[in-house]
Image (cartoon, rainbow, N blue to C red; front, side, top):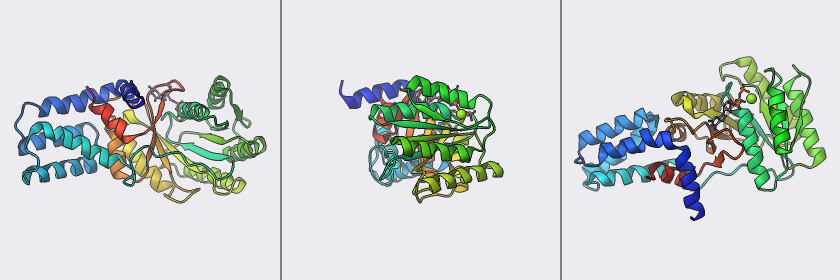
Length: 318
Ligand SMILES: Nc1nc2c(ncn2[C@@H]2O[C@H](COP(=O)(O)OP(=O)(O)OP(=O)(O)O)[C@@H](O)[C@H]2O)c(=O)[nH]1
Ligand SMILES: [Mg+2]
């Protein structure tokens, strides 16, 4: 089996539930029926039910309808191919195909700040990201800046022990920005490649906590110019349209774009076990934040760079 097909078959297993509702549903809806306006209406409804979102659904359906009316799309089985192509094009970031890579700082270390709401999968995703970076022969240091939740530091330390990476921590209740500062300092002193900063869960509507996040960022930027190089928002795919709203609102609340500010990428966790995988399409259509990784389980190896082509192939594979 080639590398591409291996990736697809692994992904395909993780996406089983999404495939069941989304693609199998589409297939049984479309195949065997005549292609007409009412079939296109039914497909539209199905895409919305699969959490693909209003914007993305409108784009896919408008283009299918236009092609149907112009006589370019005549067979129902071609509609499936049309949707597949449309999804791939829509998921490509800024017209470029392939996964959007993690930023790499010009000098060491690269700083990745991890944020998201409570229980989204931040700490577990950090463990997975660590494993991913280790597989690329990068050295990693973790900063335990969730000084809020009892047990959060210990949870990160346990991952650190398992993965063989050091964790910088403060006293319980310590200022998370001070811990972030210490982590950056230690990373510079030890010459590690990447420092990953864990933070407490917060809602984008909690002003004091959002200000605290800004303070953490400010301190990181002061100790390492240009950092954090990545601010990764972890979203829980099982929450469907809620995850989409968080992407939109966290993006706004933290600003967008320039280095050191804004959400630079999304880790979409818990894609396994959910039928709402279509949300990745909704996020892509509604925000300009690239989904950089997808989480497909609770083990360190259950993380994959988000590659639109293999994702769509896996979704449509039988
Ligand atoms: N199935 C599955 N479970 C996951 C995935 N990612 C995280 N989890 C589980 O989700 C739960 C919460 O994960 P955490 O990593 O602790 O989440 P968090 O965002 O750090 O939570 P707080 O620190 O409390 O805000 C844990 O039980 C994880 O094992 C995933 O990709 N798939
Ligand atoms: Mg956590």
